Structures are given as structure tokens and as C-alpha cells.
Image (cartoon, rainbow, N blue to C red):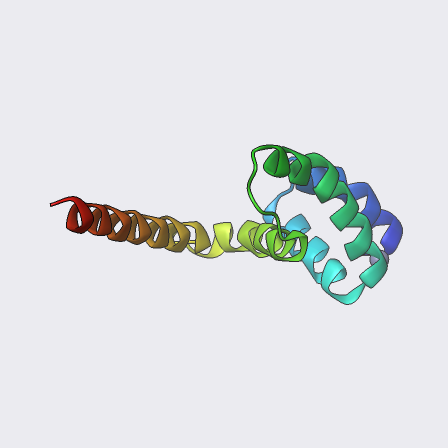
Length: 106
Ligand SMILES: [Zn+2]
């Protein structure tokens, strides 16, 4: 995949409208091409970052973008993706907060 092709694929990637092979080629190019990664980061920020920031959540562009890139690949490799891990961490955090709450008030 060359830069022109990768640039054209950015909107498709952001809308999750690529097949497995396209995503692999795309991620491979983004990994090796800083220009296209930056281009993708700008589009990604415009399409998703703004919404996340508006919700008042912290937004780490590089991290979110990596998660999106490798998350798209992982989807094809395993069902127990990164997101399962995130949900579990969140569940444990909530349990700890409840425990502290109960401890403080009982
Ligand atoms: Zn490129």
C-alpha cells in the first residue's frame, strides 16, 4: 500500500468499513509511515477525539489511536480483545469503590 492509497482508506478505517486484509495492509503502512500516521491521527482526533473530550473524559491521542488500530486487527484474531480487559478493570475498580464506601459508612 502506498501513501495515496492509505490516505484514501482513512475514512473507511474510521467508519470500520474495511475487510481484514485491508486493515492489515493499512496498519502495516501506518506503522512504517509517520506522515500517514499523522494524517490518520488528525482525522481520528476530528472524528472521535472531540466527542470524547466533550464528554469530559481524558483523551490520549496516541494511545487511543493505537487501541483503534490494533483493536481492529485483534477483532479478527480473538474475541477476548483489549476491551474485555478494560471492562474487567473497570468492574474491579467499581467494586473497590463500593467496598471503601461501605467501610466508611458502616
Ligand atoms: Zn504513507
